[in-house]
Image (tube, rainbow, N blue to C red; front, side, top):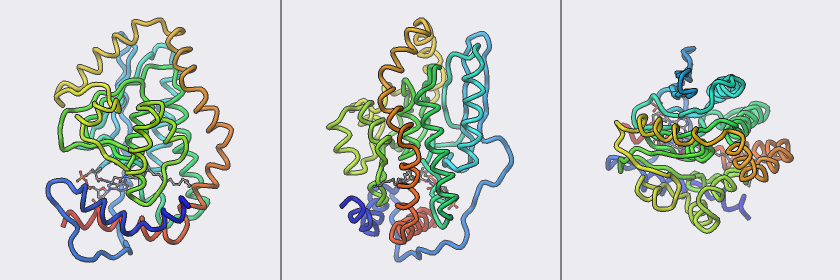
Length: 303
Ligand SMILES: CCCCC/C=C\C/C=C\C=C\CC(=O)SCCNC(=O)CCNC(=O)[C@H](O)C(C)(C)COP(=O)(O)OP(=O)(O)OC[C@H]1O[C@@H](n2cnc3c(N)ncnc32)[C@H](O)[C@@H]1OP(=O)(O)O
């Protein structure tokens, strides 16, 4: 049933774009689902900047994958490797995640990684998405998200893996798991991460509607923990980190693990079936057509 519903995506995508286009833009006319070109970030410049303050034991990880910090395979690989290095460095006890791109924390999974790719490549990509989630959600470090821009779908997932979320108080930004609006389905571990963050009933509504929340709405439902003016986001994150790091590491880490272990164990025991499930879903023709339409519309609204 869920799959059949998800195949009725054309309507969902169009309505999403007409609802959520910022700055008064609307989808105009008919768009071709065929995308011959797409500007890619093929740069070899580092996609993650790590600034480590040795005295405080805190690193700031700045996401810098222009234009919108989409989570591509290259980005995820580099991100996991950087996080693993910090995790192994006992002098690093806390990480602040933020974006180096204007207006966007992360646009979520790179749709180009799911569009027109071989099943093998889709599987490799999904494994990297799982890896990012596992590393962040099970980290022994304190991780604080300084959400200085919009954070839909995978961007919201990334934020929810953190221990505390501070968002810039700008009504133009939004955050949420909007997958159903793209005609795709948030996997069980996305869903459980959200349940663990905002509770079952709020998640049920949020996921079915594919709801994107303004910062004020996100604060109301507990999807973020604090709103601050954008220019205060890093100082606030740093102050918050000091408070969290005042708690003895071992006690905080065991408590964190107790809260998150059931969800982590569930994905760990279902990693391969979850990959197969994703590959078989995403490579279906109707889903591919929908993703193509969505990408075309993302581009079209700029013109
Ligand atoms: C039952 C079985 C279930 C099994 C599981 C199955 C499936 C689950 C599968 C997937 C789960 C996916 C989760 C995701 O994360 S999907 C991604 C969802 N993301 C979005 O919807 C965000 C789309 N983007 C935006 O809304 C805006 O770009 C944003 C608000 C982030 C920024 O707006 P801004 O106006 O600043 O920038 P734009 O002009 O829109 O974009 C610039 C540029 O970037 C391209 N782009 C934007 N987002 C993405 C993206 N996510 N991936 C790839 N490319 C993206 C956009 O097209 C523009 O490109 P160009 O025109 O400059 O070439």
